[in-house]
Image (cartoon, rainbow, N blue to C red):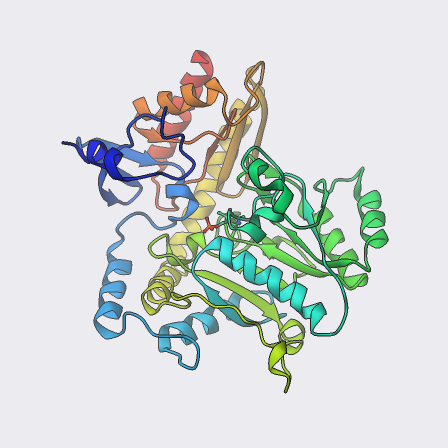
Length: 421
Ligand SMILES: *Cc1c(COP(=O)(O)O)cnc(C)c1O
């Protein structure tokens, strides 16, 4: 029996209709930008394995550091205790974040990094005897799949069964030149109730790599600062070089109060989440009153092996060669974008740094569940490329080690797909 057949007997997969989904593809090895199937087929991983991998699969340097850490300390309770990888990682991350960030809170994935950010914001007001229970978020946002993270995400088919249980969120569209003033007015109107404003900076990933301009976000943040509303940048997808700078907030002048990280932080090796905040947010929890404590933690909070893989990934990220690769991918994407963007079958082509998204004209196939989506997915798989369209949107979000040649091959196959579908 193949891996895939054995899988079917015992496993329930994420985001998968198990009745109709084809058998999963058994992967036996990862190497650089490739995943190798049990049949020995080498697939180009053009989506960084659900957006987490940045330096390539099974990277030797990260593996070595993880191995060393495993032989030293594999786990350690993080209440009342600490360890070197957690301390070192917090020091290093803070050294490159906006200078207003001053404390690091550890969790173990992106959704929980968001949960912590929300709890920090809500309790920030609660600890000061101020009742602020509403949250401001963008339409089409995606912040994760746990309940709080789901509540601040845009409503969709995915959240439908739970709608009645999701808490009170005010959704606004992403800002542009035309709506900016009315968005500001809306914020001002609700300012007494708003605990915080959470956003994916510059790129809304899961809703289809929707992009908006830094200068308008900058103005919304400035407005929230003025109205005394906390701001949360969810950098879970955009962090660690994805947008061409180390962080998406590096494109902004105004800095958020709270930031969330996961995905690429460990190079995609281990699960790890991180929420950072300003001294001002942190101070609101300091008290002789024990009830003002942030009562939150996970069994694997700040796991030493996860922190060690993040430190190793950090070393690789800081190599001049990595930034050169990010710049090369950005330039290659830009050249392909200008070549293809007038194509009759494309409604829109957009790019931020290493992310390139192509939106197919949507005659009948607008949704995530469209046939076009499956046809495109199968087409690229038949060309040994993993591209996982979001509805009619095909996007490339590659590990930074992907070669120029492999990227060119992907572009060629996209052009072929444009002739075919
Ligand atoms: C993926 C993602 C999350 C959730 O992270 P998980 O580790 O999958 O829970 C949160 N926010 C953004 C912007 C994401 O892209």
